[in-house]
Length: 342
Image (cartoon, rainbow, N blue to C red):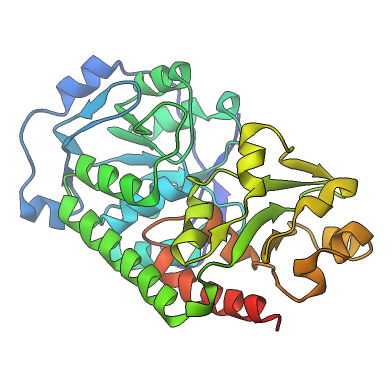
């Protein structure tokens, strides 16, 4: 089981998290314990949030009050923070334990610092830790989970997952649904509007991006690279909203006609005008700099290659209304240079 840890928002140093015996609470009991009254504006100002009714892929969340929220993904935590609620516990970000935009918001909102935990597959979700934090709402909209996992989480507390089974929520939908569940719909709408305005302004400020084809590749091993081909994926949508156009080969990948996991010999399918490529390790970048099928790609050879920083990549992989205003301008500027071949 994955260990949890407590990360102070000011220093982000670590100490072991405490564990308590797993005490599963049935969904019915959880609903009963929360009562049925809505919270006042005064209550919300004290960090309490009344909750609304929101449907998801496997049911719905309809609770009276959500005061202790556990976020199962980075974007879930961002959406809660954007709505003005600091989770009692949240998933640790891969790049930094807490990303800068989340840290700043936690500092602004005050209250107790969240516990952090890690998990990689549904089998490694730390159910005991989650139960020990005594949540009254679990947010699981940032990952696609199965109904069995949903049911197990639901035994601990009401759980909100994606709107449709097997389909990720857009960052707009995620923010709106979570803020509604927290009875902070207006805060969620404001966060979405702010983020959308930042995207729109960046697109207007960089008109040369319009119509340029792009692909997003993760060079995760010395032998192969993965390509993000889903046009509805939040990362892909980010670039599309800046005016770029997803390269047609992505559609072939979605249809299964072209593999989305490419061996070094097959890298030549990456023929987009702009290539977004991320290397999780420096030695991988050095490896690919000596691979002819990579260095001869039009985007690489012509200087149309954008390599996100670790922080930018995390923001792109967990697109949220909280992160967007922070990352969109520097990324758009770098994309502009990539289009020009600078």
